[in-house]
Image (cartoon, rainbow, N blue to C red; front, side, top):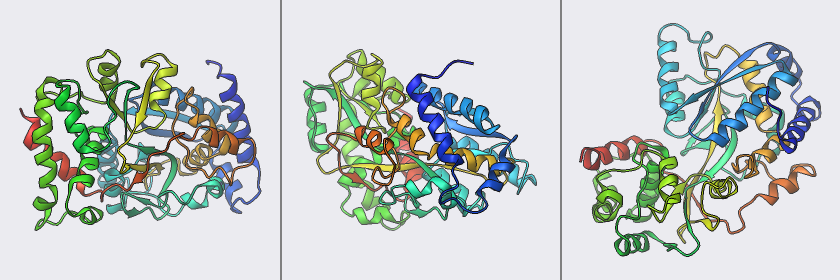
Length: 393
């Protein structure tokens, strides 16, 4: 087994101490801990980023060493695939036990699908001992406008941002982006929907361009959806001919977008992690003067969660893992761009020293205002409409 980097190892050792203390814990937490010992947790998590994968591998090692929990990371490309598997297993009779997924990294439309079908364990997240450190000013109790009802535990926050070089254009709004693309044809692009970041870019534009942004807080109304979305399609019709490969092809994911940006083929990349560019600069995957920025009016953001299916086999151990992911030292390690750079969901003012200071240290120096995301039901509508209009060209 590989040894952990010293700062990460120290953080996780102290995270163990946070978990073992009984202060402010629910009375039955020790029972949960006892039930969890010896269990195996199959954690379905997005595997598209090497820093994320390394972080989870290190967490997995610590869970085995200190909790006697075997944490198996299942790297997935799309949480929708796990959602389908959970639904299929439930339909085949495995309703309360026997499922192949114990913990799932999920949010947005996939959470909404699971919750609507009653496929999630509810009422556990706010009972975790480390919930007391959570920044409740963040949308940690709703997901794409839908209440979580304690069926998801937050473990990271995110925001759509652009990445460019210091000397390159920093468009301040959608019109400025169009102007920059017109002045630099072939130098801009975005990930092909339904890639998460690509869809987020559509949501960002729609939020800025629609004449009725309040409509986005509710599910799409067939009577008005055309009026709400028309400015988006009109804008993309102008933008696409100016893009990389004339908008006839799109990068498959943000990783490909980053590589094209690093090679100089593009002037801009995109990320849903404010620390992503800094992490890639530190690892020499992006030019040293790469930096993130957002539109002046703000950029959409959200919280990502872990959820436990109602038919999970290792419900107790899955809660212990979720609690561990929320511990101040584990969160502090995760926010470090040298480790991952995923923003914390904890309130640095609630967190004991020195972890509060470490969390505050990794806050963005020039934060961009966070805009709420549309209702989850808009996501499949936008993706399907985009594919119909542009995906077959």
